[in-house]
Length: 357
Image (cartoon, rainbow, N blue to C red; front, side, top):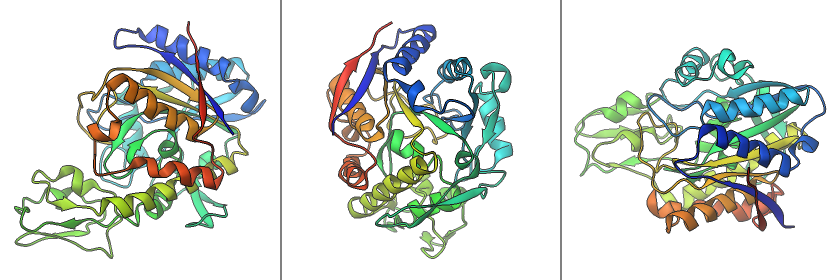
């Protein structure tokens, strides 16, 4: 089957007001009101951005969705889940502080902000699927108890999955701590002792205390959860992954978890990808990153596979190069598409429809 992906074009000079208008035109063109429930509580799954990160979807877009859902007599809340790594979003208390710092509050949005997997990331429910890796997937409890969901995602590169868009936002972003560990568990980094200078950065950032320090760092694979934080913070680039095989496994697991999320919501889920300030690394990185390409616009679809495929194609057309070549050339992030299609999550085939204001 061929899915329809809708696009609103915008540039670095497009105002917040026009971005919000364009997003709502996409909402209407894609027929999202017919997909979402007629009543009840609807999650708006977004990303609040870590620390000084600046690329996350901004509150003016989230607020536009809140207002549209209110117009539909739905009861929205804005949400994310806690992270595996140590940072400002490792538990709900710090996570909500971080959300407030970036402008996500009841007062600014007009609805509650709730962390869906609870205080420490262990509020979840298991969803049964017939996957190649999983038969039961732990999804954040408050996602499971919602009547529908709007997914608002920022397109980025990613050090483990190649890129991050709607499928990753729904899988990593809606899984509880257990679910995140299940997806990351195939990724086991190691340390190149010839490069390591024993600075201790990886030790201080490891969320599970899996790294010890002697003449060089040593990773205990029995404890390691494969989150990739050590690779991100190593100043000597001494941490290595077996990218090809292990990244593919992680991507395929992500597709299964995204499928479980759609199942628990009975298909009442719709997706936006924001293609502005596209960066090498994801919004979990605590630093302001320079964009690796021009702003393209906002895209929407009820099919996350088609949407992510179309988003990569649109970025390539605007930047003149594929996103992975500007972020992590060793990783083929597109290995997720055939597996996601095989699992019934969606189709890579799409037609593009332009929407203006």
